[in-house]
Length: 151
Image (cartoon, rainbow, N blue to C red; front, side, top):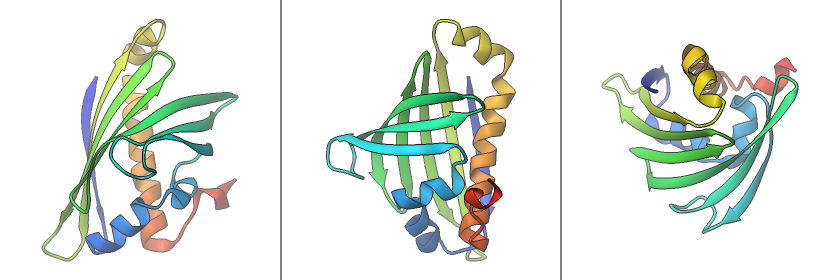
């Protein structure tokens, strides 16, 4: 399953990137994020891996994040490997003529095991969740609104 999403953020790219490239900010726009644990490589650099733990409903989901390309301010690519789900994500940040930033997120999901059925039946839910994260990031960057405030 593949899809591309985009959102315009009413701030210059350098300000958007400063917020995006700060691990401490993730809890403010990724609802359900419980913890981040650096595993290997130089933290925040290409090749680095981290374990992310999310609370989704009543379940905890662990995934391994790997930075596959770090070319800021233009691009930031990652993979996420969870049980029976593999996600390749390419993020691009474009400066708009009006001074805003366009964030384009290209996603590819690969499923195995029982998640093949879930992925097929709930493909729109994956796309919707990705867009919610983008909207929450926009709200955090533009207005300082944290998803933690809604808990």
